[in-house]
Amino acid sequence: GGGHAIAANDSAVSSSAAPVDMPQPTPGARARVTARAAPAAARSALMTALVQANTITGKLPPARCSQQGAAKVTCTDPVPGVAEAVFETYPSLPALYAAYEAAIRSVDGGRVPQNVQDCGLAAPQPTGGEVGWNHEFQHPKNYTIAQMSAGKVTEAQAAGRVFCITDATTGVVDFIWTQDVGRLLAWVVGPLHEQVWYWWLSIHHEISIGEPPMTMPVP
Image (cartoon, rainbow, N blue to C red; front, side, top):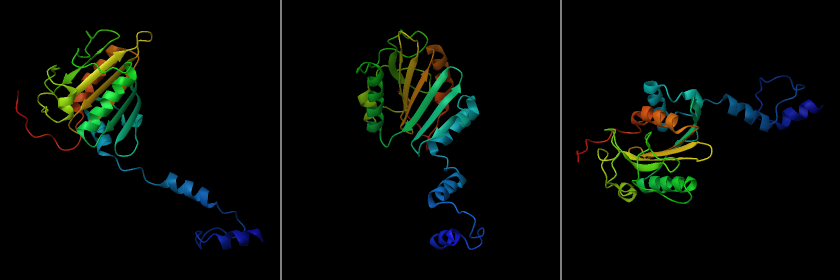
């Protein structure tokens, strides 16, 4: 009867499958089962870097993070005080800094402040700040976004840039930073400036994507 018709039209069913009178899954259902059973996607270089940073700091639990392809990872509630952290890598420095400026404009009324103040606890509220940062825990103000986009600033001079702004009504902070090595853009949102600032301090020096940079001259 009908069972024979299903078996005859379903060449993908193994000859060792259940008797012909037992309903067989539709092709669509089989595809869904296959997708569920497939191994997890290979860990991207970005996810690997974030997992390594978590091993050092305990601030980016892998179970809270998911990767969207090779270039993007989203972490939800990684720690109390951080609601979301989105990390994305770009193919070039110009692409990275175009995305950085676009992100800033989206939360700062179309403006891109530059070299105004770092995002430490003294940063003005709600205007926040924007400045370079380096691995010496310094925030140099003598390099421009355009210079960094063109690759004219060494990692020792400025490893990336950081921007923050606090909502005057809610106190929620948007914290956006770049890292030239790996061409990383990260966008973090949290309920309080202080909490996000301390989280950033703990994590950003520990994220290492790709090959370590060559020794750079000290300015």
